[in-house]
Length: 217
Image 1: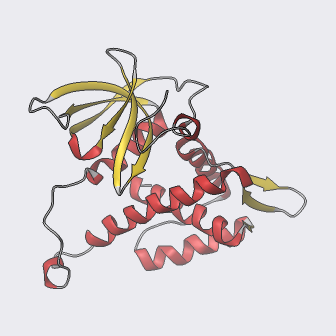
Image 2 (image 1 turned 60 degrees about the horizontal axis):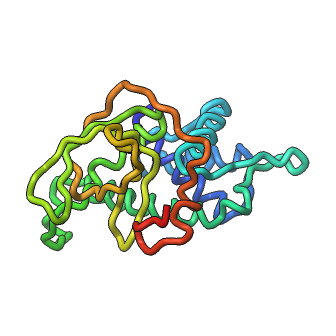
């Protein structure tokens, strides 16, 4: 399955469980089947694929989809409700990107503001690297500098702030966790070098006492 199909499934699964609070596997599978026809994607899943998607959603977004053996339904842990709302807003941005890519005659009926790209073209690649825990290489230009530097980093998470997206990643050179604006990140390359995510890394805790993207840690 393609990365687009995988990400679309994650979105639909999280969205359904947020709105319905709980659902059987059959209900989730039916939702994905209906979406397949509307979106022109193959989103149909087996029970095995669904279990793998649950693990991916937990790994990438730290949202735990649990199974209630008594009621035989799946649900999002109550402590993860706020996370799932933020993730759904992230997926909504991806929906916009996907919608604008489905037509070759966009200019005929959609008028876009002229502005600098915000780096959303790298979202799928970054998510894939985060999911598989592999290092990335990219070119980066800081806001207050004209020079471009080459970076190698371990990608940990993505964060939204004021409609802009940022990457949290550990710089391989100085071992510090840094925040990179996606609109200043270019030439992204996904390597095959694996890394281990620190057990104590928690994006929610990291930004609990901070303003915007400036962490107190």
